[in-house]
Length: 322
Image: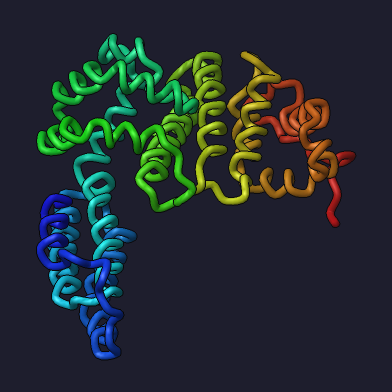
């Protein structure tokens, strides 16, 4: 796609630096005709599920937008063309098989027994310098795992192979633009950890695994999720991070003695409202006080050995209704 764009750009606008400003009629043409394609592209990118069909649609619309912009030879059309080109170049990285394949690779890292080489490199560290080293020196491992995959689309694997350095840049160079490819990949990472965390919680509730084994793994995942969200521009207000910190704190305080009833009570919506009204957590300094948090958890969980039928103690001395 990018080669086609560059060729078209050079063919149509060989001396673009000296182009005149668009006339009123040409501006109207840009708004009336070309903007229609951009509107459709924006809607598809934002609302449609990431599939190969979605990528096909965006490619078609990108070509139509390109043809529209290049048919109007003036400065504003060149600027619109260039922006459209950059956005369309990113589509291949965030729509369809490529992001699905990267997400699949992330999942396999959490199941490192799948391939031993995944244990040798810290691919999902939040230190971007270390992560870049992992993907650089672990390139052979990454491509080996992807090529052996039955889930990854072969065309996506081929694209990743041919554009590996660009993929590594997107994975390891942070951007403040929430629509950027890096932010998209980072969100995939956070969503994956969140899914794993909630799966472990469900196993805990339904008794599919031992409480102590599940709890320890949840603490690990919870810490990773907190750090992941703290680096994400998609995290709004930090409310979910605050609630998650309370859950992890409860697990750390009670170690292997907490009950699933305690965790359930902390996770339920009424407890989230309660946390917002908790006196000693209102002040940011007190909110970081482990003793304050410990007392709060004790009020909810008791001695950590509550059974399924035990009523949850209410918070009184640390709570206000105002």
